[in-house]
Amino acid sequence: MKLGMIGLGRMGANMAQRLVRGGHQVVGFDPKPDARKALENQGAASADSLAALVAALPTPHTLWLMVPAGDITDGTLKELLPLLAAGDTVIDGGNSNYKDSMRRAKAFADQQIHYIDCGTSGGVWGLDEGYSLMIGGDAAAVERMRPLFETLAPSSERGWGRVGPVGSGHFTKMIHNGIEYGMMQAYAEGLSILQHKSEFALDLHQVAEIWRYGSVVRSWLLDLTAAALEKNPRMTGIAPYVADSGEGRWTVDEAIDLNVPAPVITQSLIERLRSRDTDSFSDKLLSAMRNEFGGHPIKSE
Image 1 (cartoon, one colour):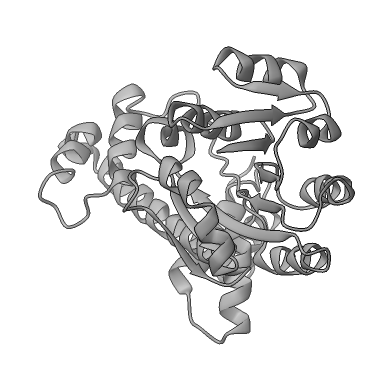
Image 2: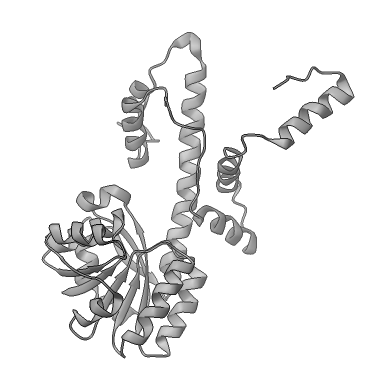
């Protein structure tokens, strides 16, 4: 199959490379010339505009987007829509909000263009290990794209599937990332407790390696945690600042809308927000309160 890949950041470029390895022809577009050149070095072709990209593909066209969620995705799709025709297929493999995917799909359906939302997990390891693909869209349209999904997944039979109609792919990936937040927070807190038990002088990398085999808490995330501890046991040079890309917030919002309690995921999000407050007014105020009611000492800056 020949397709166009829009967005050649690290993940998009890796996905394009895996598709080329699997025997597919890929034409990539990215506004950055260096990204296009790097793709060409991997055996794929490139185009210097969306119009050139579409012109380089056979009909019906197949386009796969790997661009940041939000305005960039909307802008790309707005420019792309007039270039397409009935029967074409657009796959959004980024981390779009599922409500945006449902809205966008409607605009494309009005032009009889298939729109598939594909929640994609695998990160930088996906090139060699394969990607977990959570796919939403018309069943027949998804089936036509089966060769792509089978190539990108860990195997043709595992790690991918159509989970429901348009929107369900990105919804499932959103909840996946919310769960990821909670798991990461639990590992971080537990290992932090171990690190603070100074009298035992525990080797956290050793502990993580023990847990990786036979333990009920073993996981690929623990494998990565162990690798990080081996490289940098004391996390030297890393600022205590944790970013979030949006999916955790959306998961918490959805839990509230559905009246579903999600305390672990919610608290893990709060901890990420807290990590960014280097001059916490609330903590200062709490200290002042303790001083007011109990005369407790205040630590000066």
